[in-house]
Length: 173
Image 1 (cartoon, rainbow, N blue to C red):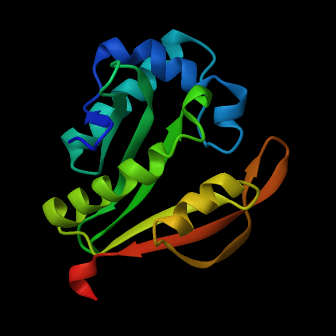
Image 2 (cartoon, rainbow, N blue to C red):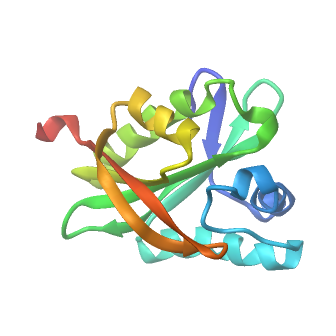
């Protein structure tokens, strides 16, 4: 898939170093549920990307600049529930890609793809309440705030709350 500025493509083994760069960076993982401390450990994430597609439980894409083929980050779906026609969306960008409107450009394309090709009714996002940048992306892209899951997860020695956002297939509304 493409947008005006970005190619969304499947992950390959050549992406290992970039995925490690992102999922080991303190600012990227600050509000993200997964982190890795070595290239070897990051292979688990690469396997997870493949398993999602193989098992039919999700799909993730690498985000790459069309202009210079630079890796920017990742976006995708997991926890795909075919019975209830819903999935959870996630994404992250390398810090040098922040503030450039990347997510607002790729997120609608990815959501449209999933609605049209997987027949989903609902896309969910769980966002840490302190992650204001991600909340802004959700709101800017018409995700509805549904409420806060108070002290929902235990992370780094404390309970954190998650804000729940949802986007519905426009054909179902």
